[in-house]
Length: 205
Image 1 (cartoon, one colour):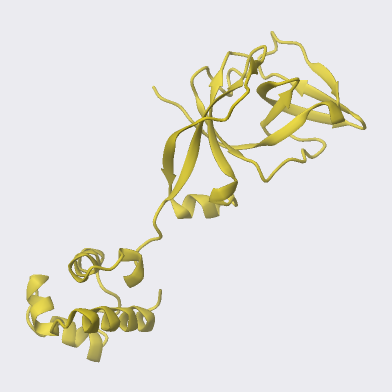
Image 2: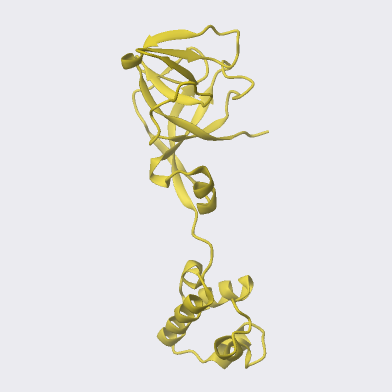
């Protein structure tokens, strides 16, 4: 939001509440002419963060309406384990809650909130990349592994949900574990369902 847009939004909010610039300046702990100078002289050019937040709260509008950062998106957390071991069968996608993620993080990852789900990891076949108990953020919009591809993917094979590397060669998909104690497994490419690509991992220490 630029300065002109912020001034217009604040003007509308003040008019809706019938407040005076002097009283609002006093509420902010400033001299009575502070907001008048903001509007007429452009000083400050943009409202300081604390002043913007207090004005938004006092006037009953969202901080974002006055130029604050976008509200974090809530990403669904599912009661489904993406197995990093032999494979865990999953017959439901029960929602266990939501976790916030900042809008700038979504932009940096190049993803949309509606396409994301949090899953948890079980097993040790993806050590050292993923440990048992880690949480992974899966982008369900990405379902076409490139060749070659070094990403992590969540797949469903015969009802089991797994997180693995995928290497495609024609009609065959090689399912690869990071832990080399686990052998690679080959499946017909049309015999597995790619559920999405892992774009973030969270670990509790």
